[in-house]
Every structure is written in structure tokens, then in C-alpha cells.
Image 1: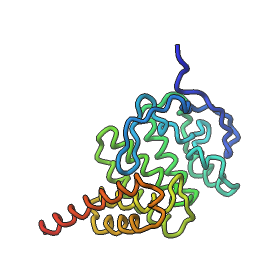
Image 2: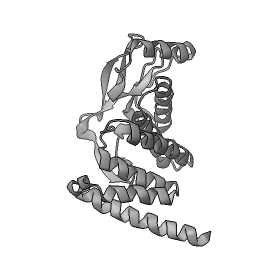
Image 3: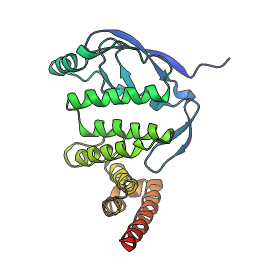
Length: 229
């Protein structure tokens, strides 16, 4: 028998002081199969994105692991009044289905909105929900791409970079690609133009090639769109 891909992580809830257990994926078990052009990753076996959100089973406070402990006293009060008072106790501490994963991310979105968290964080949450819907071929994917795009555009203008693991040039590329997927080709072309003309792209050969290809696809789609009008 090999080592199981999932292990239990003990988490201290900063809102209600409850100690709970949640699953995480061992780094040795992560096997990437392929990537989509908006950074959506497909995995062989377990998908670590399923376990990106911590949910306290006692009070309902939910957030990405990276920001779970970052909550101040007024934030705790907001969660207690708006989430905990209505929370039906349930645990997401075992192996998660894709539907449970979507629930955890939507809970994290609700908490992030209440806490007025950074738009970059909210954008990441929305994009991951979009990917989950893509995995199962659900059309709600586009709805969450729209939300993610709005959040990332605001984050690009008003928040400090990097956002998650994205630097300026990666975020500009992503905005080009998300707008392309939304068929907003003029915005898409503009973002790709900024991407390929950014000096930092020269340090990212793979992204440079991909940006130019998606830029070409967006320009062709824009031309066809204009012809059909």
C-alpha cells in the first residue's frame, strides 16, 4: 500500500476558536495532466483545488487557506452576525466531491464579500468556481468568469501585485483570455496588446508565445464578429 494522497490538517478557527480537521493533498500526490489557456489545471488523481478553502464546521467561517487567519475583531463580529447565526453545523473535513467543493468556494465568496476582502482574492475564488463548473460541463462557468473578470480588473487598477501567484504580466494575460472567453474581443485584444508589450514578458517565454497565439485568435474572432454585424 502506498501513502494516501490526502492527509488531515488541524486548523484553529480565528472566529469561534474551534479546532477542526480538514483534508489537504500531499505535494507528492499532485500530478498535472494539462492546463487550459486561463490557467485552469486538470490533474491525474486528486485535485488540490478541491481543498483550497477551509470551512469551520462550527461557525461557518470560510476562506482560502492563505487568508483564513487574516481576520480582525470587527470581521469576526460580521461573520458571527451574518454567517454563524444562521449556520447549520456541517463538516467539509473529509474527501470532497466536486459539488461540495463548489459549496465551499461559494461560502468563501460570501464571507469575502461580507469582510470586504481584496478584489484579487474574490477574483481567484470566482475563477475557481468557474473551473469547477467547466470540469462538469455546466454553463454557469461563464457567470463566474464574468464575476472573476470584474474583480481582477478592479484589482489590477487598485491593488498591489502580485495577486495570488500572479505578477502584473500574468494578470494582464489572464484578463485578455477571460475577456476573450466572454466574447469581449476588443477588451481582450487591448489586454493582450499590453501583455506582449510589457518588458517582463521576455522573462516568461512560454507565456509570451501563448499570449501572442491567444491575441491572434481574439483578433480573428473580432474580425468575424464585425463581419456578422
